[in-house]
Image (cartoon, rainbow, N blue to C red):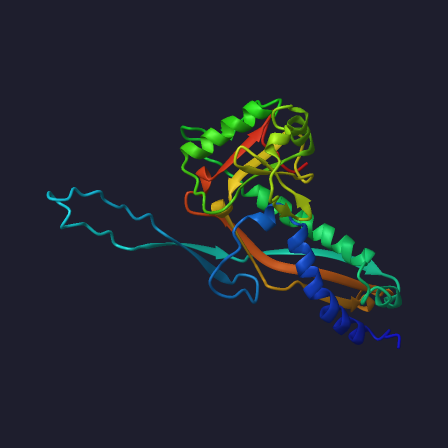
Length: 291
């Protein structure tokens, strides 16, 4: 039976779309799906604060048997905390002339309305996360400018820089490159060699990552031309509500016919401990990652 009552349609949208929307959004985000998303606490409303914890480094010792191997020193086990305030609301909204147009798409797998809203929210999250990128400019500089050709030599140099910064190896390293830089790598015969083919490729946002010099390389078309971001997962922490909120209301208060549908997600992000040296910005003229 066709449901055209606003309240009933709103209930159906929240029931069918909210879980699906949340899943699709997380799957479609490139940077947002790769940074750390673990936290302690709950996000119920804007302004809620959650906490991320990381154990501080523990120093070991080497002792000589017969000399000093019977004693050892200890470190105080300490935890470093990062408090993140969920003070951002990512929103996308559309106007509908007739609620029947929406009802026909609710239970379907594909929905142009849902896809349009998801794309709008995805852009806002990308803008926000890339806006927080701030690599260290201390020696050795992690802010690499004047790179006209992102070729094998450029990628190798970044591999050396990441190694010297002692990036952890417990989780993957990533390289997100705009279409121009990604094309540079594709045109480089060294990087396009079959010798690099991975037996177990990594899939991110539906794309197969190319494994090169220790990085999982992916094309991110959200980036402006001649831009790349290389990083370890916990250089940034991104926290959000567990589910997208979907709302529908009429426009009678504005003396208009029709309906407004909005989707929103509350969240926040922050660089992690030593986050400034756990990522590298590469660009040609100036760092402006989002056009």
